Length: 74
Image (cartoon, rainbow, N blue to C red; front, top):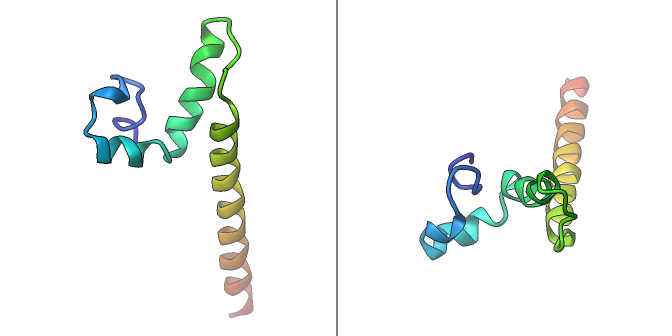
């Protein structure tokens, strides 16, 4: 995920299919939010990265909750 998130090189260098997939990775969205802050700017397009990261957080929470409940039932 590190190599597909735009940390080390621009995402524009990736093939179109890989670029489309990388746009939905959580690390890519975290980088999109944090990178402007290092330049003393606010992120201009913050809604999609926040929504993607929130979706991963909610999905991870529900998966962990379901697995924990299943583990305690046995």
